[in-house]
Every structure is written in structure tokens, then in C-alpha cells.
Length: 273
Image 1: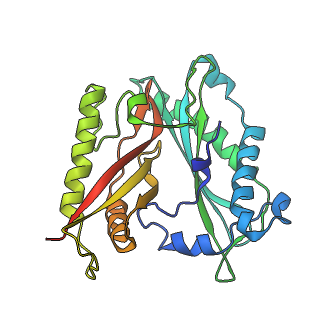
Image 2: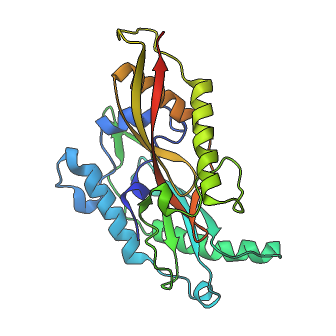
Image 3: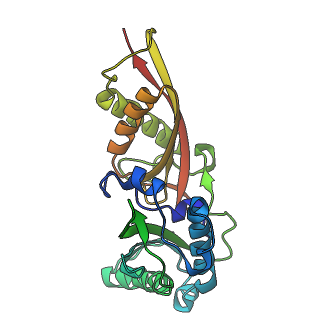
């Protein structure tokens, strides 16, 4: 039901958390009671596993939604505060495969799933709070929870490639276009975005006409890029990361109208002439 990417902290959310990406990786995650004896270097793994097990333990498909044949992906944002308690829970449901002419019915249907997902998170135990530079800090997280009926055979917890989805992430929502057109639009958008925003590093030690950095990004089911990896000289990888962080939120890729996570790999070329 839950994939590992669902459990990462909101560190790469377009600079929302003031450069904590590097700080938190060097310090301590919140500690579940069952993880207290785990070495610090393995705390993030124990943390992810514990949240995953917690969600699976308390997951309940709302019966009234089941009877109506409703399905949803709910993104739950929350904070583990400096006292180790869960606070500021915000759940946003995205109904799948249905439309409502009545706005109030649409809101009620979403609220069914939002309440169910929020209840799961509210049941998290009190933990030892996260630390940065030895001080307790609040720790923000975002956890998508998938509510799907058993008739759906695809595993929406996977990370898909473009050849597996019905259409690619888009800057403008247009589900009527073909898969091939959506992929082409996405590739052109990424290419144009990098041409507009990419800058050569000030200190260039390469004695070449060009440098290529190979990049992989994962666009989650909420249209936000949470994770990237790259291969190439460090100063050039840093420039690439700056551009990736500027990418706006997209309309996510979908399979059978379900928003899903996709991986996309591409080369970034620096012209040094």
C-alpha cells in the first residue's frame, strides 16, 4: 500500500523548509518508541518502516465510499513537533475516475477520505523529536495514502516509467491528448526550462567544449519532484540541482485516471565554448 518515497520528509519541496535537506540528513530523524535501540545511521530506515507499518495497521477503507465505488489518493501533510507529537495535520483528497456536477457532493466525497486518512496519522505515537545540530526541531512530512478498490489490478505504490503510464506529467492539465503527445510536451517543457535557467558554474576546471550531467528525477503523484540523482562533475551537478528545484508543480502522470509517481532520466549539456 505504501512505497518508500511516501515517507520522505518534505525537504525538496521547492525550498519550503529553508535548506534543511542537508541538515537533516546529517542529524537525527524523529525516533519511534520501537526504534530507540537502533543506531543513529539506521534511524531513517526504522522511521520509514514504522510509519509504513502504522498506516497498514490502521488503514480502513471507508464503507460508505466503498458502497459508492469511490476511490482516492489522499496526500496528508503533518508535523512531528519538538515534543514528538503529531500536529498540523492537513489532508487533501483527489478522487479517481469520477465527476460530480454538485460541488457539495464533491466536497463531501473528498472529506470521507480526508477524515479517514487524518485519523490514521492522528494515531501515531509520541516520538523522540528530530534533532538539528543537537537541538530538537519540528519535522514536516507528507504521506500519500491510496484508497483503491480491489478490482484495480495495478500497484499504484510503484514508481512507473513513461511507457507504463497513460500520459506524462503536464504543466497544463489536458487528459484528452494522446500518451505520445503528452510525453513530447513534457520532454519539450523540461528541455526549454533548462535552456532558460541553466547557468555554467563560475569556476570551470574542465578543459572541454562541453560537459554532460546525467539526471534522474522522480515526479510524485502530487506533481512535485521530491528526489533526484545525477552523475557528473560536482560543480555541474550543483547547477543542475538548482534548476530542478525551480521546476513548478505539475499535473501528475496517470494510469486509469489514478495519479502515479514516474521516473524520468535525461542528459543536461553544458556548452563551455
